[in-house]
Structures are given as C-alpha cells and as structure tokens.
Amino acid sequence: MATSLVALQSGLETVDRARRLKGYTKADIDWQVNAEVSRTTLDRFWARKPIRHQNFVAICRAVGIDDWEQVADLLPSAPVRIHDLITGKLGEFAQQIFDWFGALGFEFEELPWRKGNYVLAGS
Image 1: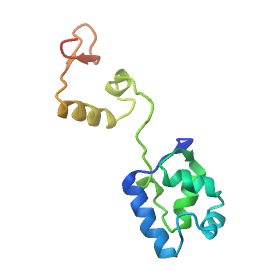
Image 2 (image 1 turned 180 degrees about the vertical axis):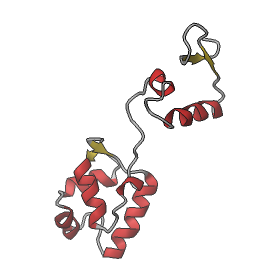
Image 3 (image 1 turned 45 degrees about the vertical axis):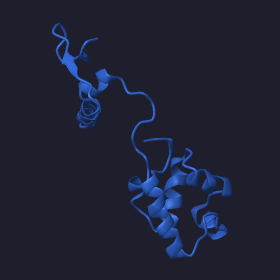
Image 4 (image 1 turned 90 degrees about the vertical axis):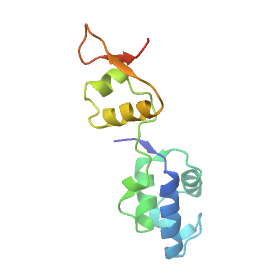
C-alpha cells in the first residue's frame, strides 16, 4: 500500500462535487475536524501534492466518498523496471505499458538468448 497519495484531476472534481453537497468550502474547518486533518493537509490535497494515505482516505470519507481509490492516482510514481513488468510481477499493468509504448510508436523485441526479456527494437 502506498504511504502517500495524490489525487487525480478527475478525482478532485469528484471530491469537489461531494464537498459542495456537504456545504464545505475547500478549507472548511468542519471538514478538517471530521477528517481529522490540518488546513495544510487539505491545501496539499487540492494542490495534488502527496499526503499520507490515512489522511487521503479520511478526506474522501468525510465528504461521503468511500471509494477513495477512484480519487487517487494509484499508478506508481517511481520508475518501474521493464523486466519486472514483463515477467508478470505487476500483472496486467505490463500489458498496459506495452500498449502505451506501442501507441507512442515504440517497438519491442524479445532477446533470443533470454526468453521473456525484451528490449526496445533497434537497441
């Protein structure tokens, strides 16, 4: 589980609608109290800066959003080794990466002496 989370832009829009239904401003003291977070944490949430996982979940739940995963950017922010993707350690995410690179015009070729290991074509 991630120790820090950042909201997707679409997630912020979802939270914005939910907080307006609750009658909260973006830095509402009642929201801070109900989520047990500081004003600074709410400001970081709106600025799409990393905040602690538990605070992220609390901010969402305080406005009635239990499905906080739909608000969070759950893609890894750290570089992911291509080898790990290809060997299936990240499951279906590997296929998404291949599809994404393919859409950008990259081609991969399997190393003939090492099955399951790929390099960019022409490398």
